Length: 173
Figure 1: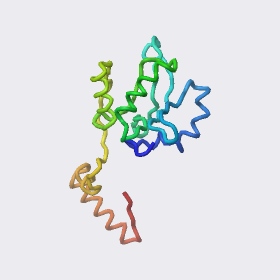
Figure 2: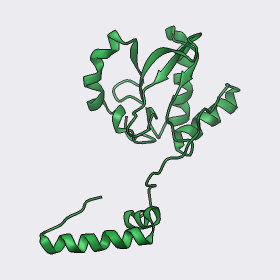
Figure 3: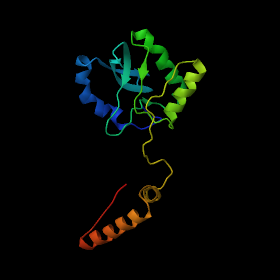
Figure 4: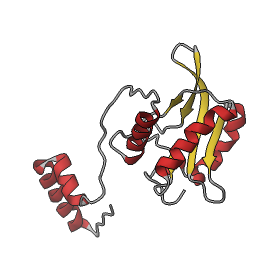
């Protein structure tokens, strides 16, 4: 998917290839649209939600990054999202889709919310929480100073200076 609306390295094909062997055994699948270059890519598992009363499509999320956003093309975001939701019932998949750990302030969630309002689809947000993230356009040093505070930042500069006296020191962000 190029360029994706939101980066999610754990949904990149290079990371998904090793997981493909679990698809047949764990009731998993890979939802894609597009021909040569996919517009949408979402690994998922069909599970029973809550008390086990209803089957649900549960999009994969990564515990370590708390990022469950599917890869979807920026250029065709609203149209592709609408196509994907329209295709689900045609493939004998459950009608409930769970997208865990999706940033509500990001482009994908906003497009999903707009589509749900326009099509009068039910949309429910469960367990809303904030997580830190470096936003585009924010300088890394400025972000770090604001995130950890001036006293900690001064202490880190002191440690940096002392370590650089011992030998060459390099940092890449």
